[in-house]
Image 1 (spheres, rainbow, N blue to C red):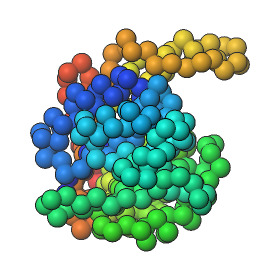
Image 2 (image 1 turned 60 degrees about the horizontal axis):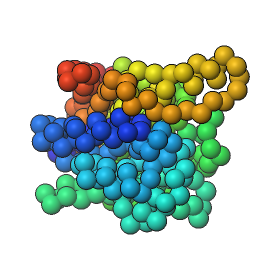
Image 3 (image 1 turned 135 degrees about the vertical axis):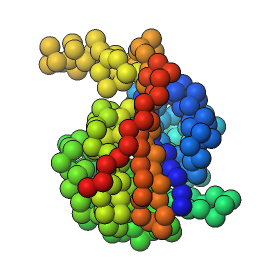
Image 4 (image 1 turned 60 degrees about the vertical axis):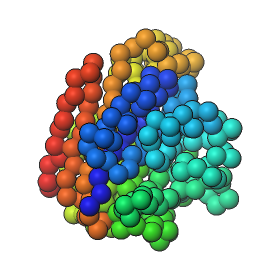
Length: 266
């Protein structure tokens, strides 16, 4: 049996501070074998810098996943070749980086992680529903986690229903708003969006003023991360054995108060 922690979109310095504060503590408290975190917004809200990537691994994260902002910071590209930093698997051929990785720890436990980008409303990529077969063929573990980075909850749900007997977890990311549909069905645990790690005020982790101005004027304003906002930490923890998830719960920490929500079984 393995126990894995998953973190949705880590946004800017507030998100990195929450990783530093809580990841190692959660690893110890809940006996986590691996921690996976989506960090495509971890540097200033857009992309991931090489410096921040190294720091995030020091905080206890074992695999970094990405999405539509994976390539915003060019200095991280060389690290994608040598460190467990994923970009969406279904980018076109010859794209820098990798979309699948398998981890093995000293206890002989293993986890394969797949990063996928949704087909609707984001970058032009190969169809994730058709690309998943190739990704699964690269997995060296029966325990398989998919970070499905997508705009539409319907697309995430459809992907889950199509693959819930073949993977152990499908976690939605990208929209930054945690959903309350954490469940286990078939072999897998699912949630439409794991929720952001970072500033809980503002708009999806970013400063509210720029977002409001954009909607009022129709002109795009420069987004930034307001580091004075109060913060939130959100992690999905699931147990898995031989590819089958048996238990899952969500940890939410707000103002040092820890809230745990159990998954339901379909």
